[in-house]
Length: 71
Image (cartoon, rainbow, N blue to C red; front, top):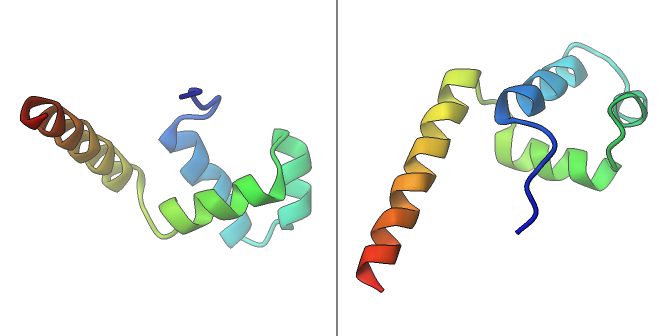
C-alpha cells in the first residue's frame, strides 16, 4: 500500500484551515491534492485533534498486530 505524503498532523491542520473559512478548492490547489482526497480525509479525520489522531494510529497499529497474531 502506498504511503501518504502527509502525516496525520498535517492532514488535520489542512482540515482546520478549511474550518476557518479557506475555500476547499484553494486548499487543494495549494497542497497539491485532489478534492476527493480532501473529502476522504474529512470523513476520516474530521473533528479530530492531533492527540486524537495519534491515539487512533496507535490503536490501528495494535489492531493490526493482533490480527497478525490471530492469523
